[in-house]
Image (cartoon, rainbow, N blue to C red):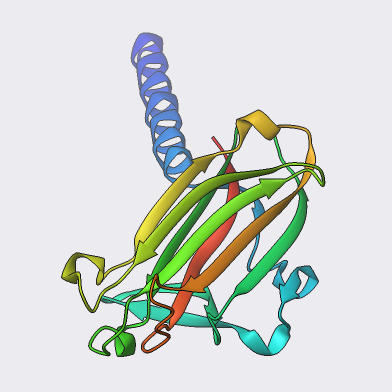
Length: 181
């Protein structure tokens, strides 16, 4: 085989290999902090009996989740150091068995605290009984880059909806994690 052809074949193999590596690497998330894995070390209010870690299926999409047992007012707090280019990713929703139960939904809130100040990043009411568009996972990506390098509290709150009707309030936080982008 002539030397030029050999070089061409080697170059093509290297290019295909690099292309495959880039394609596969670009599809994976760079998870810095898996909040489900660190759930046992999180502060849980009112107490651990209010939460469970389980797989939750919504519309044929199963996620490792933190299920809330009592949304009268719950809070989960993780103490974490935020990486450079950090993003908080999670999905929230109401388990399917709550979709047809009369109620006013669940209020989800996410915030960051440095011990002195609390910055609310998200407040959202999910009500699949009244709004069929809420019958899904609501995927969220929140930019944490303003907190890069800081050790802060990442806080997830759930509360009953605006009328404090707790019927069907089967709230879940799906796959909460901090990723580097």
